[in-house]
Amino acid sequence: MMNDSRNAFLIAGAVLSAIAAALHLGCIFFGAPWYRFFGAGEQMARLASAGSRYPAVVTSGIVVVLMVWSLYALSGAGVIARLPLTRLALCIITGIYLLRGITGVPMAALMPGRSTAFWWWSSAICLCIGLVHLAGLRQVWDRL
Image (tube, rainbow, N blue to C red):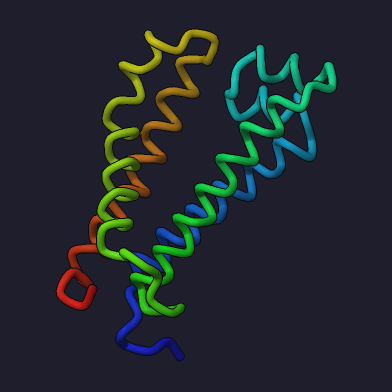
């Protein structure tokens, strides 16, 4: 049974960030078809097909960031020990998810090569994850 002091929204946010990290790992391991399916762009898919390390390096960086974000959400939720600057980190993480969610579609014009569907879906997903984080952050604010 879960301890009442643990925050379900931040736990959900941690799980969502971890799922996103796992999907990015899938792109590294399964290559071009996954890069294409998840909308990374044809250039990334072609580089992966050609054996370039660039897609794996970039995607590994994203995996690390998402896993750190997952750990901070678990910390804020009270599941793991308090990490340094948890309140600040959760504010930044929440802000990035929300900002990515609301600016993703306009960003499509700045980053051609990805499908419109990619921008809509990824923006909606980031917005939802940001809202989950925001709900959790509001609930634990006084404890951070």
